[in-house]
Amino acid sequence: MPDQAFDGSFEPQGVAPEPSGATPAVQVEGVWKRFGQQIAVHGVDLVLPAGKFIGLVGPNGAGKTTTLSMITGLLRPDSGRIRVAGHDVWRDPESVAQVKARIGILPEGLRLFERLSGRELLAYSGRLRGLPGAEVDKRATQLLDVLDLAGSQHKLVVDYSTGMRKKIGLAAALLHNPDVLFLDEPFEGVDPVSAQTIRGVLERYTSSGATVVFSSHVMELVESLCDWVAVMAGGRIRAQGPLTEVKGSAATLQEAFLELVGAHDRAAAGDSLDWLGGGAQGGRS
Ligand SMILES: Nc1ncnc2c1ncn2[C@@H]1O[C@H](COP(=O)(O)OP(=O)(O)OP(=O)(O)O)[C@@H](O)[C@H]1O
Image 1 (cartoon, rainbow, N blue to C red):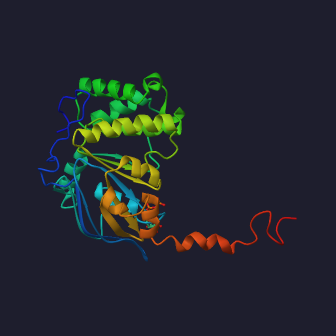
Image 2 (cartoon, rainbow, N blue to C red):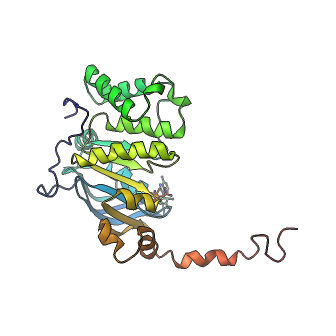
Image 3 (spheres, rainbow, N blue to C red):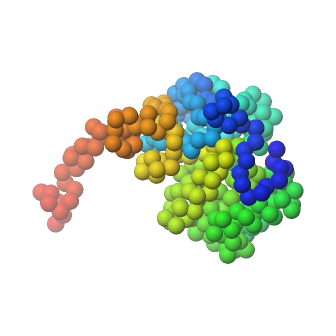
């Protein structure tokens, strides 16, 4: 699948387009993950349809990264079943490899090969994916151009800014034209101009029928980008579905989110910090 010609547009392979084809991009059934005494993921069931821009949201420690790691073949679940584009991720080592060939990942705290230039990194990623050299060159040139990295392509990645690192990581994740792209906090530390560029690339990618799944804490961003949302808290899925359904009657996704994760009560917690601030008695001297 990775060797198909790339014409600058993104045509997903292997996933039946929604709504006619019924194969979801991701199916998670009864998945658990424990780290020692800590249960990070409590029997999660999740169905993410193909061709959508999907946001996985939740407070710190909700289990988002753990869930994405299990879906993308990086972390083995204790129990349960995960399918990506209809392929069982954890059935055997071969199935993990098959799934990895169909997905792209931009993980949180991405570790890149720092001593390569941006272009070398893409060349290396393409060859690892089994793409022919000429095809890698062509795709890399297009991606560097679209992501506004052409001028920095020969600079070492170690000298890239945070936003440039996110963009070169995204280019590497897209190079083999995956069916499903997983992004952990893709806009963190990215300036508004770069964010707009990334957004444009992702919108183009999903408009051709591919799926983006990304985790974020930034509700405004999720609300403006996503047409499908899953809300996670305490290792459980609290809601999932089309954005409008998850929002319900709430004015914003932020409001619906606070309601779903039961955070309204915590909003008043700052009241106990009566020593904090200039007006407090016995405060600063
Ligand atoms: N390798 C690990 N060892 C021990 N505990 C872990 C490990 N990875 C995650 N956890 C725990 O599992 C829970 C879920 O963590 P996870 O990183 O999946 O949450 P998250 O929703 O991605 O959080 P954040 O938004 O803060 O990145 C947390 O309580 C965390 O401390």
